[in-house]
Length: 329
Image (cartoon, rainbow, N blue to C red; front, side, top):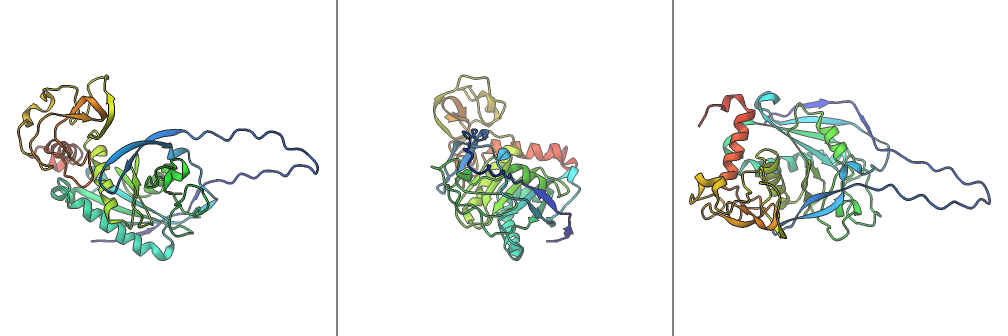
């Protein structure tokens, strides 16, 4: 492993609102309504591997807590080529103090090793660049209660319960995506940004910036699942009650066609996630009206393998991005 440290300029994040005091004896007017935080649907992951969706605050609309000036450094975990011919993974840390950066580095190595052990990453790991962005936090750890009574002064403002917006879902670990992407942009390239929180408590979230608990061994599977979306354009295969009535999905692993014709060339083939390729009802969040090609891939349950269809989709994406793979079988 080659490691290079680049000192980069400090960044300013967050804001402070200051209210002027009322004149002596004045009666305060009725308070204006608080700004409405926009909402998004987020993927939430359970320790048993099951995945579901919840409505939470859009992390891009979250306020950061203070005027923090955070100096960031970039380390090269693995560089195998120029960013225009590689997939660039960028790990950004939150809740790591200056003294805890070696621990963050260990967490990055652990998550990358877990990802690189899964096919097709295992066979194509030499076509990835992996970067580590050290954004030094004042406090150690992340926010971890919905009441907001233990807020940490950290670079990315990560917190369980999605910063108090999902009081029934502790494991939803949300991040200010705008700040995460700002720091990730310091790396030479960023095809997928992964924010690791300095905590051993299980948690994470899907989205434009995937999050995972840096110190939790199970949380690395969240990264594997998210790359199925961002690289392979794979659909989620988990579902809840409800009937799909929309158009044919663009993703290769979800279809309205009950005969499996969308993946006809794979039908009956053995698949790494178990069994053979067939037609299984329930996909893309709907229990009826949509079908998936295998019983239980990682796009449905963490800890599983990609299906043979998912693997092939990932490899095709590798070939589209990486010139030296074009034309290979």
